[in-house]
Length: 272
Image (cartoon, rainbow, N blue to C red):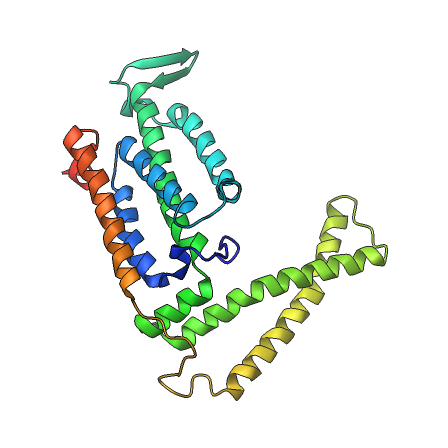
């Protein structure tokens, strides 16, 4: 999440992280229950407009971070109609026949609906991930939702270790190149090179973890039930207004599709 987070001064960046969770989670759960492709497509457009508009994320950055999943889902959508069991959709019209491969209309629609549903849920979650620092999110959970601070700050310390270890790994690689250690070769050479990287990296990680533990212990971490905070997280008027406006906009989209008959049944109503 820290890699996806984009620093900014937009309205969504200034909101309480928990307000974005409250606003987005019910919508994501609802999209997960849809069975037709049209409503997820509408939420994809809504999420993309929110990211590029109020969140002020550059379109190039937006596409670069979502492109790998988009390409993977496109491949899945192409392969799904040919991999699914034929008896599930053999009652629907045949769109294409290539020898033993048969493309049924029902399989194509099911694959498209599944891909768009997953993609819409991902884009909705990007609203949160693009505009929320993981440190602020954990602090808000500890302060407002009474998440155990021992566990919360432990997770926060682990997240902070990731970029430090990445930088340490790059330094180790540079040191090996300066010493002229061979970087090309077969599998055995690559395994040996990985071993040379892992030993100093593990040593550095243990050293950093020990220093962090000593620093936390010197500040009486875990000795008290409650801790003081330099920055307090609370729900402001902007947070409540964002939740209300986002829910109303989503309800408007749902009502529009329901009245026009394009919404389709939800998964639990379809089973009933």
